[in-house]
Picture (tube, one colour):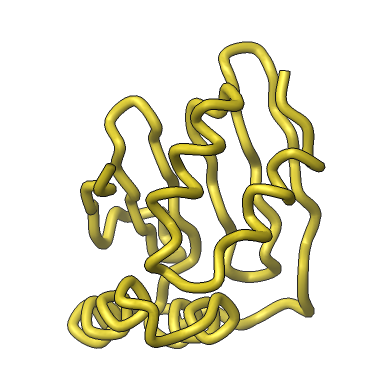
Length: 128
């Protein structure tokens, strides 16, 4: 059974989006099957086969744009994945482009981004 402390230790190694694939591999090895990260306050729900751990909110609540701007989001996401922005810059960009949360599925190795209405905005394969 994984702990919040183990998750935080793995996440502390992430300095930019370029570090994301290694992070996913590490938490997958801990037994995480999927997780949802919420842009509004930074809390994250990690799920395993029979266990859930929640990392509490990390910052003051952010307003999420009501309409997604997919073109800008994709451009800024690529920059983040290439290590050009830090995590908080990425979070702010998500809020302004209408991304409410993302869900990472370890089995499918996908990251799905959702708007405030719960609609899928973008699904990406995670490199491994």
